[in-house]
Image (cartoon, rainbow, N blue to C red):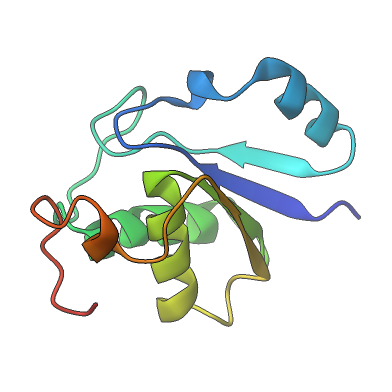
Length: 118
């Protein structure tokens, strides 16, 4: 069985921003799930617009799709979301891949992010 990988990308980017050659190569080995952020691309959400709201969006998608312990790859701002997702739901996530990201929202976007749990 191929390990599933969920991808979260930079803020305001869509699933189409991923390099098609990278996605094609990875799809030969892994089951891939590409996520659009809320209100971007093909996605909609009623969750709050905070990091915790973003992780709920992804966690709900994981549950609804029946994905078991995915590896989450987070690119840029998506890495912050992926890290927080793993902190809140460690039993539901197998691992993380961080791509050009940072470890804390306080390092960037601090004026944008409104989450007291950091």
